[in-house]
Length: 277
Length: 277
Image (tube, rainbow over all chains, first blue to last red; front, top):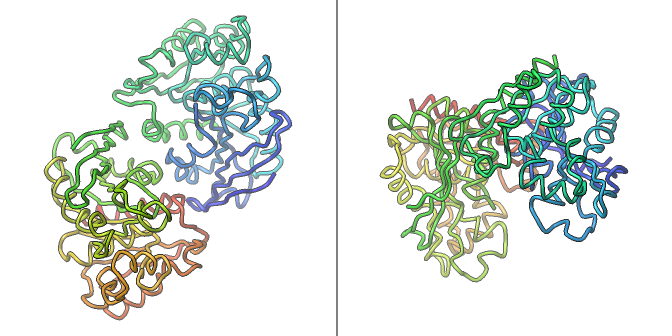
């Protein structure tokens, strides 16, 4: 893995790396924030999964989270949101499918399955690389925004015991039942909707529950909420049915942007820090 | 003036406006952060002048400053960094001249002088508009980054009593004596270097001093420092000669990016808040 950028930040370092991903069969870039405490020892880490159109950079630049991560002594790892530049027809035609829109699942359909294995990448290959190359303890939590908020939920739900905690901001909570999910899942996974349920947080909750306390923030003026893309009500219903503890906070007036993420990231970082300690 | 965006942020609002500027003879966009306190009354404001290539958006998205502005009850106003799309030959050829590089001065040379009057825009026309349209008290301070750090210095030095305080991050402190300044000032102001001194913070300090306590942060690993573009040593010498109080902090390992700005913006906001109170 090759370091392609390093910026001093709040006494620690923001670093970007390029590496060859065997899982995705392409080169990938990811970013790591290493707090000052990582100069002297190993630190716990928070995985941050970003949303549609994002790269490893959006959270690092826009969330305003690094100062508090420095204070709390937590590393933050931001993967990219899809394979890049793999040359598939249609990979760059839509903002909500293909490049920038990997949905953190393992595609089964041609031509996507050769590269679009983001779930294995963010839960297996990249953690192994990070654990071997960076000063992290292995104690980890996971969070994300929108597509990445759902990514965080499914990573945690499919791997009980792996993460100390999970939270999400404006997650696409029920992709099997929303327009974004219907488009992308139909192409990545095929038209048998049963297979989609393996990658839907509400279905996973109904099937196996979850021992985590889930923290979810959602802006009430988020246009994707109004369009039925996010469906926090489905997440709430699934948690109620299965007795999973969910703190779902509807935040009045907030939209889907990083202005929303930045406004509430402090509480998410403190939520995770308390469980990573 | 037309609102083109509004995002709830830390209980207040990030808003973007488009308006016709008579001074610049073109349409301009600026951004305002209005803290929650502005819902109920008028608040003091901090002007933030951005650097080369930036727009009104960089600071609002990347500085991580809005949470603290909300807490302190300070509005932040971010102008753009130049006229835009005025159709002059060469306006978009270089990152350090023309669009995105107005240098906060009043150009005297053809063809630039018709539009490139950024000093009058940020000290006269835009404050008048902001004071009439937004809930601000008129108490104001000014800060900025790089080209905008110098812009903040010259706005304060040329207008004693106007601002409660001034600070800068990695300012182009002595443009009359650096490659960026030589290129831009030669074209905006002509080849008589005497005229450049009206727009050089070191020359202005030597001529008239300053009653402000200046706060300046500068990263030691900033490549533009190494290239001689920033010259904090000239600012330090001018302040020493004239007895102006300067707190110049060389920050080890930091570069010129917004990772640097974000790391130190809290102390700048608190510095201004104490003087705006």
